[in-house]
Amino acid sequence: MLNRLAILVMCLLFSVNASAESEIYMANQAGGYLVLTHDECSTPSYKDKFPFRGYGTEIKSNGQQVFHEGCYMIPPPPTPEEAKSIPPGVKLIPVINFIDDEGTVHTLSADWFTSEKPEDLAETL
Image (cartoon, rainbow, N blue to C red; front, top):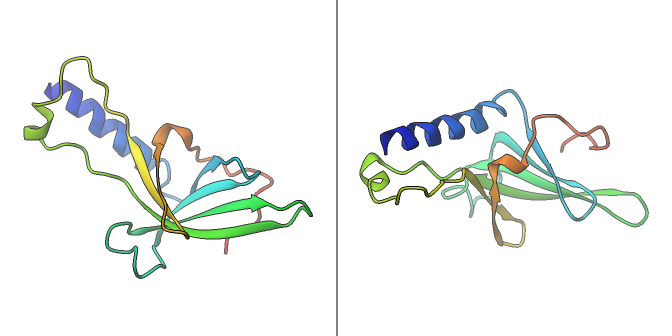
């Protein structure tokens, strides 16, 4: 059990360290990207639960890139006591909880993000 917990912690640390220098990116269905930064969340009502700044981009029909602010958090791994109750064979997936500018929370797999900046992404706000 502790072996699985150690692997989970290493995965989470790898996911966080991959973005330690700048941002991480994920393509979205609006022709743009979801971008996670290490900046502080700029939305006062979200800061307590979602401490980091993220934003989404979309491409309008005229080709204009539009930005939407959001915030995110990475849930902590289970404590050793909590890990005892995880059934054998169950794989824990590192996730990111992102809250958008409309207040909707999206749970996303950390594996969906990359540290390579897309060439078609405009400079950040």
